[in-house]
Image 1 (cartoon, rainbow, N blue to C red):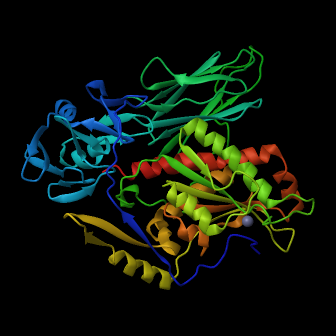
Image 2: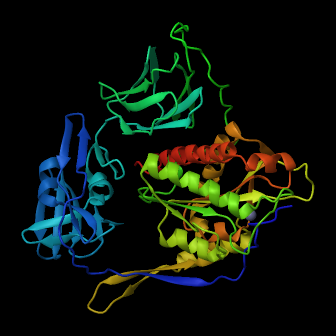
Image 3: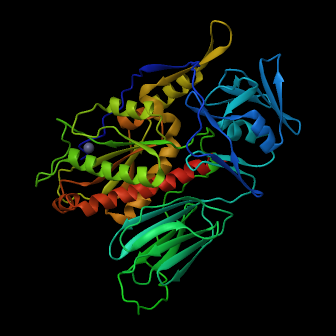
Length: 512
Ligand SMILES: [Zn+2]
């Protein structure tokens, strides 16, 4: 029996009108803290950008120099034309869109004129220019990189998973590529078959002193403390992510330096096939924010264990651990739907995620059952019934453009609040299977761990979303484990690893 989360989906649909109105905001120019770096076969160059009304913009003059495109003012259209080898982009002033070879694309902010210069949001490069250019142009906002052409720059995320001893750490490389690890006394050098690395350094811990970029652009060095023995490593590959698992024992200097072929058993391939990333949504979204929802709170205690543990406290505890990991290691903004002991309605939780424009929603719960034997984690993603699916189809077709005073149009989207998740069902299914794979490495799973259910919170989430029932609080053994710090940290780490992999898949799937 599930005690929580599975509130039936209402069949009546409240349509919420979301008006996307072009706001004319005045902002002072300033420069972003870190410059944008263009990486190509020819090397690295800094791309000058500035902030305009809170949005990062680049001058078309600079774009013309960097990409050898021609820029012409179009007096007739009241805008600007960008051409490259006979292909053109036309952008009208003060509208958040451009016409690329006759096809309209949305931009996050309008193309504006500032004195003699035209300024475009930096996404113009990856959304509009990339469509007429003869090389790949990929913007990675978080790591401040603009990748041009056939440059292999995998995303590398390091994580000390447990301080030990033995200290365990992992280095994820996405997309997957060949990796070689060389162990020497006091350090490991990880050599990755790539032109460079998009590397997020990790906080060290235990017997690991630092995980830092190496001397070559494609190497990472893991330095060990004086108390460390000889590190062992193994490399696994799964879902287009290569993972280096490192184990550092405490130790005697006389220990054998031969690397062990295996630190952990190899991970079995998931029974759930992950769809071709390129078949996913074409919309360009760069990850900035995730929302973690600690279930229950306030008067709503959730499940209570025989020894008195409460679901509402456990979910908040795990959520806070996960927030720290994601903020420190991925640099993403993390919003908790609650950061204290208060009751919040399910719709309000979904609104926090939707208003925060989160790229991901993960709701944390602890399960309860009538029989104490029931145990193991479960992951839920949304199931849409046929009636709801039809409502979504009609509502989507009604999305329309309205004329406005003074000419032009504004877009009007009819989004049925209950069913915002309809656009993200496939992504959420991938998310659920990645969560399953990462959790099952670390904690007991129920006999059918991935499930679909019509849950209201998930239905209203306008982003990939999943709900995790971490364990059964009604099982005495699981209650005891849930009370330990170790277990809560392990759960947070497993969900963190899943977030890293899902983000890599999600961003990879947007590469044209
Ligand atoms: Zn619950």
